[in-house]
Amino acid sequence: MTTILRGNIIHAPSLGRLETLERGYLVLEDGKIQGLYSVLPEAYRSLHVEDYGEGLILQSFADMHLHAPQYAMAGMGMDLPLLEWLDTYTFPAEARYADLDYARRAYRKLAADLIACGTTRVAMFSTLHTDATLILMEELERSGVTGYVGKVNMDRNGGKNLQETTEESVSETLRWLDQCHFEHIKPILTPRFTPSCTDALMEQLGRIAAERGLYVQSHLSENRGEMAWVRELCPDCGQYWETYAKHGLWKSHTIMAHCVHSDEREQRAMAEAEVLAVHCADSNVSLCSGTAPVREMLERGVWVALGSDVAGGAILGMNDAITASIRASKIKSMETGAAFLTVPEGYYLGTTAGHRYFGAGAGFAAGDRLHAIVVDESRFPEPVRALSLSERLERALYLMDSRDIRAVYSDGRKVLG
Ligand code: GUN
Ligand code: FE
Image (cartoon, rainbow, N blue to C red; front, side):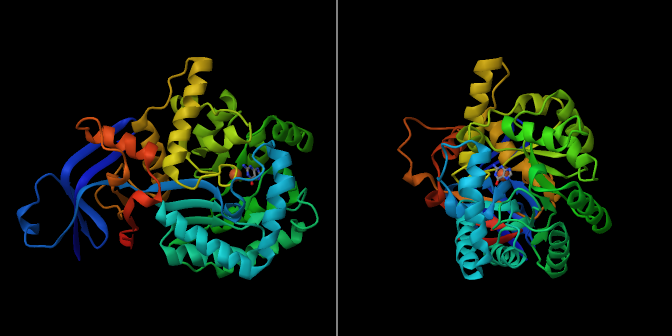
């Protein structure tokens, strides 16, 4: 089956480089990108063209770190630092997901809103509840979101309503894994962070990861108070990352959210292991965690992508995560002189860098299943002059929200519009 889309195509094949095609053609064969053309090849000329007119055909977003249960508490407790925010707002909010009717309603709304704001790939935390996690996976699958979801493991410091025993955590993880039969949503092991998981639990998770070939996601060096706590809990580890590494959880495609205070040694450990560092600028500013050394990490060869960290970040739309990362990098730049992130770099980090996690190529690469959005700019103010496509991308990233997204393609299927 051949599908042909037409519009203003803008993609980011590498960090800082945009490729644009004015009123170009994107040809799909069975949902896979066959090619991009300025002039449609003869062989396709008799076929129907889905013409989006002046619409912008952009890569869809990859949100590489967010907490599904926290969407319902977005915009709450933002004046607290991380550890108090977790105890006061987050853990009580997550405890609600023992109620499966509540979970169904909350997750159905999240899944629809993700697609509406153009996020088609995710790496997501659920809660420790196995059945609610399966409901989340079902709802994401139904809406067209693809990617990884983790049942959270936590056997300490969660309080009485949000904690498992070590044995429960392991047996529930195995029960959950046995029931994960979704086409587009796969399981990822999710020790919440070191303060939530004993060594005994981490060790078992490391074993399960190795035996079943599973990826791992967690948090790293987000906040100074958190880091001091980890040093107290794990006096045998020189640095935070080693608390994961010592149990086999630090490996290629391990996802570490935040990395705000990762120093040169920790960054080099990430680069060496091919760990994905997920930068969540909105969250890091809102919870006063800091501004991550993104430029430094990139220069050291660390694989960096972006996350909304909903609800440490209050906004689901990844275009906002992109502009937040640009703003945070400018604060960093004013402090340290490091070059800030440009718009093409932000777009790359919010799209291609995350899509790579799922095996995708560079930008709209031939052979990849299409993940794309179509943005309609008609709600924006009339521009003061004719704009280039890269200027239109910049304006779209700063101004757009779900109202401006006319169509969404996920894994080669049209899932909105
Ligand atoms: N560290 C451990 N849990 C969390 C969480 O839910 N959000 C954030 N931002 N950091 C965490
Ligand atoms: Fe987080």
